[in-house]
Image (cartoon, rainbow, N blue to C red; front, side, top):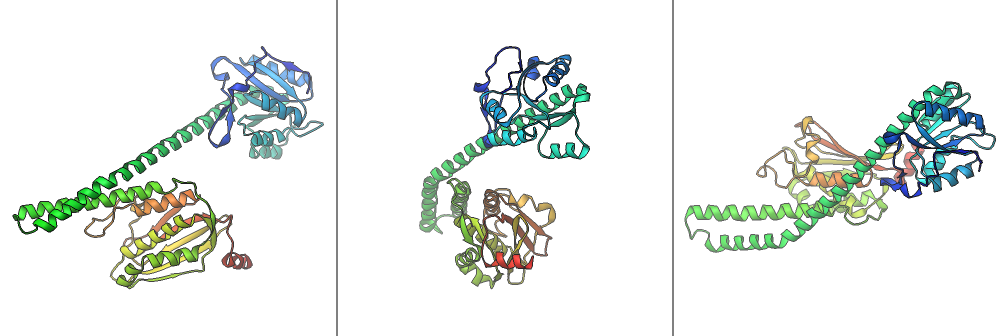
Length: 408
């Protein structure tokens, strides 16, 4: 490593590395408090390092600088020390300073890189920014360097705050999911007893008391059964994704057929006609994918119009994802309700009109998002609905996949 080093004291920051969400490591920002700044400079000209130092000192920084010239030296330094920013010359005799960005990504470090170069064309400057550089400064205009460093540090702080927020949100969601699971699981037994004994009261004393008593017993039975259904649905929702999912090649044709077998009674009673295929093989949790198709098909049958349900399930391949469509000829959904229907327990109709707790589409949304997909609905009131969701193409295989490639 180059022997050139300018500092304000030997400060070992290794212990300050803090792991964040996604495996990213960061160090505590010092510039915002007292102007202290730990910099790693990729440079082979000592005079240029001195000019950088003076530019930062004139702007009120107290820089501590380590200098490296090779990738090996750079990698060793970022593994053992904590830096606020990297200043990298673009062209060095032994390597390209832009490669430092890839090294930092490989090490899981979030340290902004500012390119400091003697000459850098406009196209190359844009390419540096695209590849992840925080900014670039020409050596004949080092007056810009302090503000570039400040902006890079502010942006890193914002990224850190965003990661902290995401981690806290994920933790909060895990706690809430655990609470929902425990509460709904533990409530099942007392609710079962309430429902059972209110039903016994109804059977034994129906017509033996006055009309008001019969009405009150009916309300109690109905309320207990509805509460049982809500708790069971909440438990089903909280169970989605609680255990680690094992993703395997899953034939969507088989999933739709299995869902139709589970819905056979509803299909026969309504005269529903369901068409599908060919559908791809995707990498998925089979039980969750079955639940997804079953919920969407069940909804299409339930919210039917005056004609027998006619449902079509198709899949279209895009470069990075499959787009699945479940289209029906039912009552449809007004566009202003397109987002609301995926909210847990949100209903657009009364229980008298259509039974259910309003949790089915929430489960669908949760399953799709856990498979890194999206779900939405395209519909007009009275004109049927098309529910669409995506699954990643990566990991798909099968006859449909191959035929699609031939068309391309």
